[in-house]
Every structure is written in structure tokens, then in C-alpha cells.
Length: 418
Image (tube, rainbow, N blue to C red):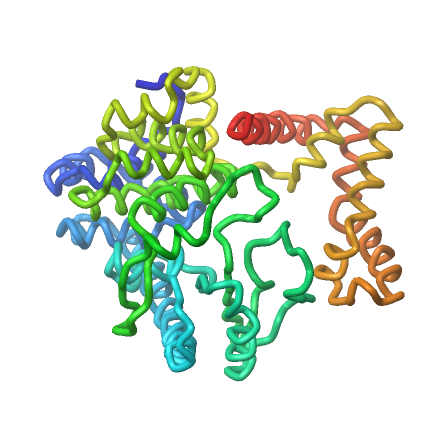
């Protein structure tokens, strides 16, 4: 058991969300909660986008009536708002999927779109910020055209003829009502240190449905590993318990079908053993799933250092997020004392590759106007981070505390690919 300090309200949330907890277990926990506990739990759920998920759990266990007011209303209102938003998103998803099916374009439903319908099976249980679909690279242009025919517009410059190694999906395509669709052709940026063979992903996919429409889903082992990478590597564990809850429910749903040897082999093939091992160790520390010992031993023949596990556990369960918006570059800038190295770092962040500037500012990379893009880049960086840079030079105590916190996050990220 990890010895990592967590708040009382976080402990309540962990226990109540635990998919392995029975209705009796949760009812006993609720009996011991006072008004202060409820205040803390409700605020924490709101902060971590888990109000609707916990409402889902309470309803699932028949405990909804045991939530005292006004907290009952907070959970219920969040659930209803999530359901309304998801119904709208699913309606848009159906329109897209029907048009793609009519054009014989195979589609794999990714992340929330698949999870909501096939794992949670409750339209209000999990929020979705956008719709993610995966198509073959050769179907990208036609898919973009189909969405444009439905009223979606590319939010940024994109040309399939570019190398695009640093992105995994077409820039979000947006509708006037704010709906975002991300069209993926791969699961992770191809310049990342993983080796994901997309032919295999398609071969292992299996039939599923979204609102009664036939689609494909990632193979069970692919889905599990993709979610591990998404939470722990791509999002630096910042999705917190929401991301971990997805994984726990997938394990619960497919516990009799999951092929652990196949999963281990896939981790090795993708070179994602550390990411998978750390995620599963954290899940086990939460006591949200039973992970076979031999699986962890195969993924990490040398057990993960307890200090690494403890650090990751604390990052996952952060009660409060950092006040300052600190990217890896800002943390490096704050940690660097050499003036020339600082200036070099700033120079690198202004003068990004032409293709990156093109995407940000909707300017074709071959256009002379790309120079204007670099001016806009400098202007935007000053606007977004000028105040933070001033605090760095003045060694502001609150900023330095956030730097220390974020430095741990980014060091863990580097450990994952070491």
C-alpha cells in the first residue's frame, strides 16, 4: 500500500467511485459523512468533472436518495446537463457515421464516443468534450469533405500532403453550435517514442454500435493500452480519477474476455511497457481492479521504484491544480539560471517549424505571410506568458511552488520514455 497523503474528501471520492465497492460498502461510507464532508466531496467532484459520474454510481447502486440536499441537486443537475450535451453530440455523431457508412468508409469510435455507449451505457454518466473517430489515412480527404458537407469547418490549416508526424488527427472540425470532431488516422503522434502499427489496430477491431449505428471498436487490449497511454503519457495524469475510472470500468466490463498475454505482447510491440505498468500499478493502489501479478512482472521485470509510484499517485490525486499555466518549456525556463540558455529557449518557442505556425494561424506554410505568423506568435506568447516570465525573473514564491509541482510531473513523463 502506498504511503501518500491524500485529503479526506479525495479518500471519500476514491471509495465511492470504486467499481468493486458494493451498494452496502458505499451505504456504510455515506452514513459516516457529515455536512463538511459533503461540501468537500461536491466541490472536489465539480473541480474534477466527476459530478455526473458519481451521480451515475449512486443511481446504479440505488443510493441516490441518501444524498442530502443541496448536494443531491448539484449531482443531479450536473448529470442532466451532461446528458443533454451528450444527446446533442450523439445526434451529430449519428449524422456523421451514417454519411461515412453510405460512402463505405470504415470508422473506429474512439474514447468517450465508444465508452459512453458501450461501457457506461448511460448518456449522462460521462462528459464528452468532442467526438473522436478513427479512419484509414487514405480516407482522410473524403472524410473531411463529408464533414464539410454537413457544415463542419477546419479550425486550422491542414494539408494531407504534409508529413504531419507531430499530429495524430485532423485539426478539430467545428460546427456553429460548438461541436468539435477530431478525425484521427493514428492513435498517437508518429514522432512520439511509441511504435503503434495501425494495420494491427484495424485487424484487431471488432463490431460495435453507436446509437444503433454499426461502427468498429478498438480491440479490447488495444482499448486498454490506448486509455493507459492517453491518461498517463499524453495527459501527464492530469485527467485524474476521471481517466482512471474509464480504465477501471473497461477492465470490469471485459474481465472475462481480456487476454492478458496478448495485452503484454501489445505493450511490448508499442514499446509502452512502462506506461502500462505504471497505470495498472496506480489502479491497483486505488484498489479499483485486480491486476494479475504476472502481468505486472512481465511489464516491469524490475519493480517500479516506490518513490516513482508515490510521486505518480500524488500527481493523479492532486486536490488543487497549479495556479499558473506552466508548460514544460516554462518549467525549464524557471529552472534555468543561465541567461543565454533562457534566451535560446525563448527563441525556440517563438520560431517554431513553419508547418506548426501554419496550423496555428491558418497560413499556408509556403506563403510569404508565414513571416506575419511569427510576429503573431511572439505577440501571443507575450500576452499568454509575459506575466509568468516576470514572476520567474522576480522568483515569485507562489510561482516557484507551482514550478516544483510541475517539474515532478514532467520528470515522471520523461521517466516513462527513458
